Image (tube, rainbow, N blue to C red; front, side):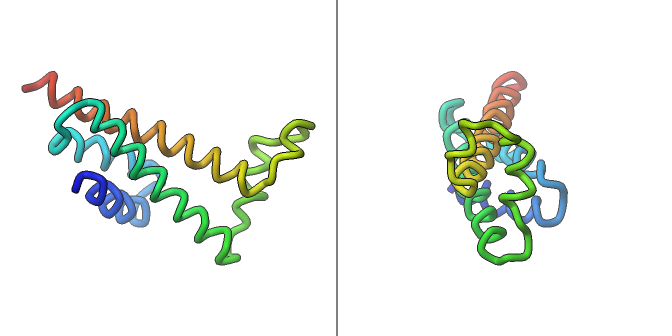
Length: 118
């Protein structure tokens, strides 16, 4: 239930608002619904990874946005090690890592805020 709520409301928030609406949604939902801090972090992270992986794949395969070129040059640069990693794999790893950690910590913060004020 918590997982689906974060995905649905986070997707709506990200479409209507800025990209960082997903962590705000996770913070609010976990403050209201999460039972433990571990659940808040885990479910928020899993929802963010799912949502942003699907969204990234839609962008890549739709052909409207060249996600690999836009984000890949920010992180890879001219590194010899990163030249051997497939670009799409690297981009999806970066996107899921950043989204998962950011949203996971936001969900955890929401749960701790609830615990602090109750």
